[in-house]
Length: 164
Ligand SMILES: [Fe+2]
Image (cartoon, rainbow, N blue to C red; front, side, top):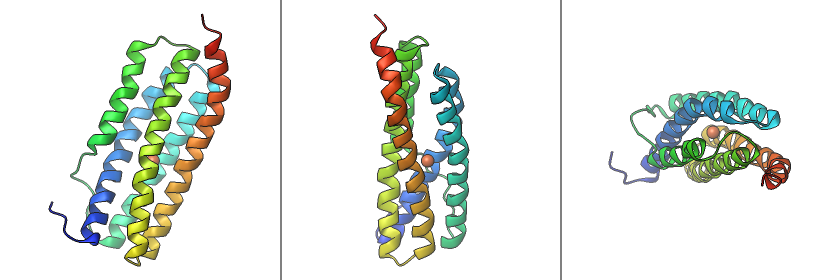
């Protein structure tokens, strides 16, 4: 797809986000299973449910703008998630792995925050208020997930520090 206008750029960003969310839905169960901390596992599983809702929001947006959001692969998220699963091969189960998992999960959230923040700004610029509001709801969830992970990291990193 060639992108020339801000409308087309918004659709392009939305396709990217749609692909990213779909990839995350597939990846999170594996990451949850790999975690030792119950708190971390629960946070990942909670965010999995939230992520399914975010895919739904993108489906709603797709209807509003009258464009399909399928057919694009978010290569950036693919890379971020690939690095995340590398952790599972490199670090055995325990608090050090949990610390690494949080680091990987926070990368995912920050990548999404950048994408949703930009898409929301484009939607606002184009006066697509409903779209901007839906994007804003997801952005708030991503920020919250990042904050939760940061909080869990405080305990997990302290436990991981004790591993000699
Ligand atoms: Fe998300």
